[in-house]
Length: 143
Image (cartoon, rainbow, N blue to C red; front, side, top):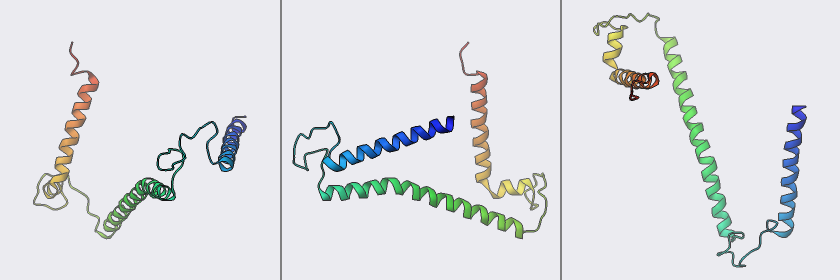
């Protein structure tokens, strides 16, 4: 029953848009709208061919630009992730030791010394997480 109702709503919208487009196609205007001027440079309802081209260019730019940017970003993420998987498969499989000695490779200390971004990211994450936790338990609300 819900499917038929959803299908009916979609069909009603499609038929309504078809009727509206046929009315616009016959008269060239929206029904119920009165033009104030016949000059296309001063009218909000009529445009010159140059204005139509610019509208099309900006619409395409504003619609396709973010989609293409997002697609390029996702492509980069997938490429980078695949690169890391290939690199991990070709390396020898040595477990990471939880030692803080930075002189030994494959230890937690070595990783933390070699990548300070990771340390900074963990500290920032801990600070934000701590602040959110304190806010959730009500540490900042006056009593």
